[in-house]
Length: 246
Length: 54
Image (cartoon, chains in turn yellow, cyan):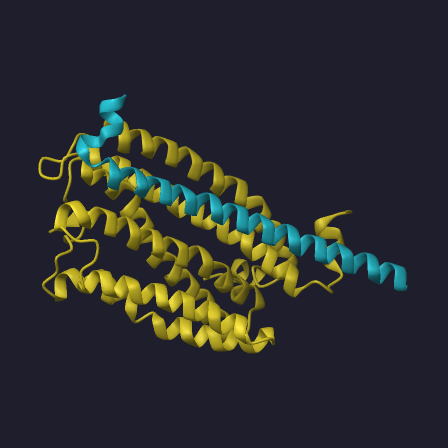
């Protein structure tokens, strides 16, 4: 397999230029999928036969929860690449994932709480899925705290990368918590026994919202990573040509 | 319209969820753009300082 494309991304000027070109595409896709998903979620999808209109929280809760774990997986992979291949750009990408990941973990927890109140009768329950998602939030906060506590960027990169990699163990726990333990939380939303667990009138808007959140995440991480790369390379010669005159 | 906003009585739970998600989306866009702009300004400032030194 040809890995030239991968090694090219290790070059800060190349990454800065290509990421800048990719952002509008991801942002446009996120906007289109988001508008279509919202029309489906709030207008076209029928009420649930058990939860009525209250189930519509699913269209922001599930995409936020998926984004929260996806962001952590991307952060850990980037941190691992940075640690093994000493690739500065990879560390910049990892650092860029944390804030957005933490925010959407909070959104997943808060919207789940708002959904839980009318359906379970409580805002919070010490349920395995909820607790493992809360641990994910603490991992993000720990990662950000560790980075900001170390002044030397290279040391902060290495220490936070180790934390990110250790925290990966929480991802399968989040995913399989509803299978491994008796949980108040509902089972897998998309697939149950290999079949879709909801009709297409609900599934399509949900998939569109998930696509919108994923594209949004890609766009935000690339914008943040460009800023992070600029900050790290602020004394490099290529910067002047890349950002143009003031 | 009022019927739709009422969300079958679940409006106190449904709409705050959407508002919170929208808030997080907008806030992250603002923060990311601000961080990139600050990095660009800093890089420009350093480039100008280097030029004036030489």
